[in-house]
Length: 305
Image (cartoon, rainbow, N blue to C red; front, side, top):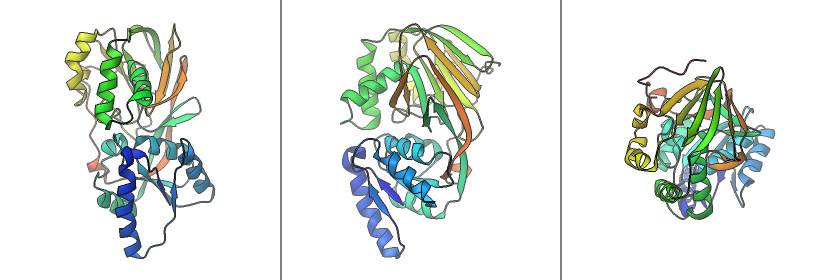
């Protein structure tokens, strides 16, 4: 079954599907198609497919589409396929899924399903990154005002606007037995490495290691953030002296004020919040392991539980 979000990528997904539909029809294979009609519809369609024991559900769209389909399929035996057709395509980037539509379609038909982890915050699953602080405020800004721009451009524009408004917040962060308190720019909790249209915010994350990886930026000034922004695209920000990293099963974040919490770029809650890993929660049609983006090894030791 193919679930297409016709609005993804500013309409690019509709063009992508038109080309893929011709390939599928020429192959003579039977296939089901459903188009999303409103926010949340992809989740409903995926849930219904899983309940009917559909073997594969393929999301044709961006990370928002993938997020919805993931939340409809999580915990089922239905495998997720992804054909990137959005603006950011961060999960495809981390997993090594081809951006060329026909190559991604070939993968959907040839790949074997592999179990990967998901993160969970409240009742919401996430496949990429969840976070609190500056990153969540940027996500909220993107969703409010910048969806007309491509992924990285929308994120960077919203980021620059939030630089004028955001103030580092007092946070308490607990990862298993590790605890951190202080003013922080952001806390990003990753199941995968990328968010925001190519920002490698949690470059140590692994899709199927049974852990969540955390990247915490402490009391970093706006000028320091601006100077170091290009390094985030490569993961080079890990060497910054005010960046902390940790890995664990559960994360709790509390704050003095109610802050937004995002999951895969969608605002899902406000602090205080608990996050956890759900090992092996999703079957995904993935390329061979060598195609995935390799995680960075931290130059400093992990925060010890």
